Image 1: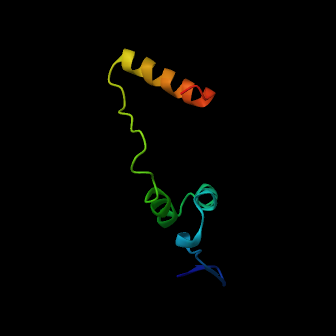
Image 2: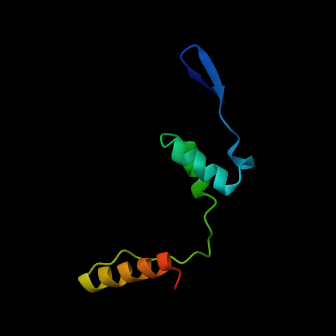
Length: 75
């Protein structure tokens, strides 16, 4: 589907042909492109670990610790 910009016409990229890293880079550069974001989110790993948002101070502290450990590579 072409995108009209002024007098120019630009073709929208085929998100299905993009690698995950290329699509992620595209989404970061084109944050207003909801279609690209949907395509990227549809590729999420269904087996990924999901974390609930904490509802207590202790839960928040535990979540921060998990994030810190993931960043450090110890988790």
